[in-house]
Each structure stands twice: as structure tokens, then as C-alpha cells.
Image 1 (tube, rainbow, N blue to C red):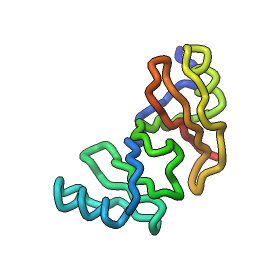
Image 2: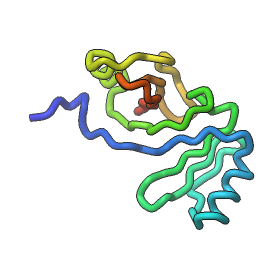
Image 3: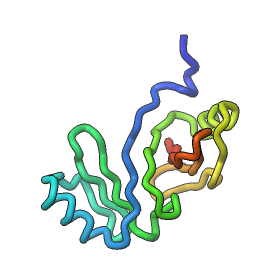
Image 4: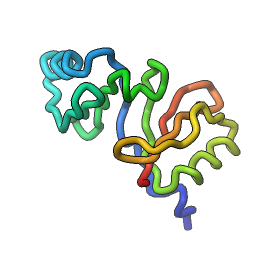
Length: 120
């Protein structure tokens, strides 16, 4: 049986930091026909990319420092981060309360940035 702290895990979104959320929503809608799931002002927008969410993070929500990242939705952020560090990854930004969830920023052993998020 798998560890309940590790499952079910999925990529909840692919995060793209953008300087202008409205312009980015228009670009991805016009260029690729991606429908908007929701927009949170100039902070954040979620677009439907065919089963994956493209998350457009404005400057106020850019937790990665301008780096695109896969965002992993987990049931327990602390347990997922412990497993990540044990596996050779590193913590970049401690868990914090976001507007909708708890989130942290980390790097895998190869230096790729990942966001780990879950319920409050």
C-alpha cells in the first residue's frame, strides 16, 4: 500500500510568471484558443489547456522569481517537502499561506523549480 502522504499527487498546473495577467490571458486565448477557467484580478489566471491548467501568475503571485514551474498538488505539503529533501531536492521558499492554499517552492536534485501546494 502506498504512503497516504504521497498520494494522490498530480500536477495541478504549470505556472508561468507574467508581467501582465490580462495581456497574457488574451495572448494564450488568441494564440492557442485556451479558455479561461477564472481570473483573480491582476494576480492570477487559470486557463484550460486540455486537461492541464496553465496558471498565469502576476507579479504579486510570482513565488518562483520569474521561473516557470510544474506545480504539484499534494494532500500534505510538509510530508511532500520532507520526501523531496530526503530524495536530494532542496527547499527554496518555506511553506506559506497563499490566497487559496498552502504552498512552497523547491528544487529537484537537478535544479528544476517546483511548486508544492495543498489544502490549508
